[in-house]
Length: 77
Image (tube, rainbow, N blue to C red; front, side):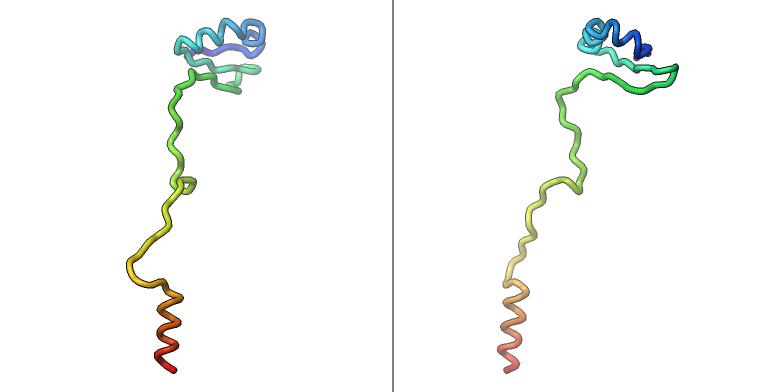
């Protein structure tokens, strides 16, 4: 990991991007404090959180609830 002042990065961005392509990770500093991290592209999608994943609808054997209720009401008549 390499730390670089933001002003230096602006002046020599092309060279620093070449380093990132070769696997180097850069941390940009503004007034001595880290403001950004530039990392090589991994090409791998990050895992999708469970609450964002597509799920299949629940399927159960037998009749649906509304049909069961209607049948029960008819039987009571």
